[in-house]
Amino acid sequence: MHLLSIVGIGADGPRGLSADTQALIAQSPVLAGSAEQLRWWPQRIERIEMGCDLAAFFARLEQALAEGPAVLLASGDPLYFGIGRLVIERFGRERVRFLPHLSAVQLACNRAKLPWQEAVVVSAHGRSLEKLGEALRSLPDLVAVLTDPVNTPARLARFVLDLAPVTPYKLWVCSHLGAEDEQVECLGCEQACERDFAEPNVVLLERAPARTPLTLPAVGIHDDHFVTFADRPGLMTKYEVRVLALAYLQLERGQVCWDIGSGTGSVAIEMARLVGGGSVYAIEKTEAGCLLIEANCARLGVCNVRVRRTRAPEGLAELPAPDRIFLGGGGRQLLPILETCTAALRPGGMLVASFAGLEQLVSAQSYLLKQGWAVQYTQLQISRSASLASGSRLVPLNPVFLLRSSQPL
Image (cartoon, rainbow, N blue to C red):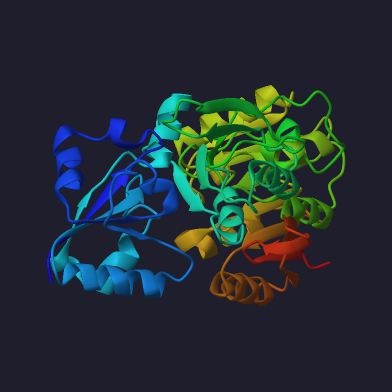
């Protein structure tokens, strides 16, 4: 069989191709592609048009290749969510070569002037929005979405709002990229829900800086009001888990609290607002984490959080004795941390710990029971709603164990 050349083209057709690539197309005995792509070369007689029956199309193309070389036209970069994978599976790597064009995602990010080396790319073309939901769960700075007539920009905007109502995402809709009627528009998700956009298009979801809320609830500050780690945006005690942990802590005004492994400071800040004139000590081992906690305290108007950079249990003995302790995990130092905490808690004190793994939960329970402490734990399996084409579905979060323990009377 002769060589099959897969040539990527853009919406500008031949004008976007190099002279060598145009010459290759002109000299090829057979030209294959979709009707939309073949219209750029109306003078060609030997053409194979791609229809709905892909198997029949490939069979005709293989017959042509038995007699001579051929060119297959494809959109953008054929190996980037394109036909390239199917071509390799059908004809083999040795019998094909690729001459890619710019991908739609690359063009869109350059039109929006957004660096895209760390962008999350999701294809919603002929697929469900499940992958998009998984991507948005960690609140990335930039998500590029390949759309289709069902998963339109309006539907994507509604999906984002349903998944995380106060997440500040801007929506870039890039239509007819590379064509004379190219359109690039940036708007809010609320605006995009009510609009129709020219097709084909690519959607970019750009996360805007976190907004400082004008008002806050007494308890249950939404996740998106906290500034998070740029490289680990989802690493925090989630809203639903945090609310239940605060209820388990049975906080009272004037108390002293510890938040060990404070991370973004979300639990510490909520505790500080509930204990009023009391104090909360946020223990965090990294400098970046400490700066993040201080930034969140400043933007949410909390002044009774004391940030301490130390690796628990080191440094805990120097803190005022607590009435309440929240422990986020504990890692390899779990048992030494628990030993320090149980010794430091004031009479009537209470400890609540959050664990992602069953092994840590069992270790903590075993240690506390040996000390004669009362122990209860809850498994949280939480799902959040996300919209579908007709209706909605539930997107699960990672399961979490919450342990609560109190001193023996």
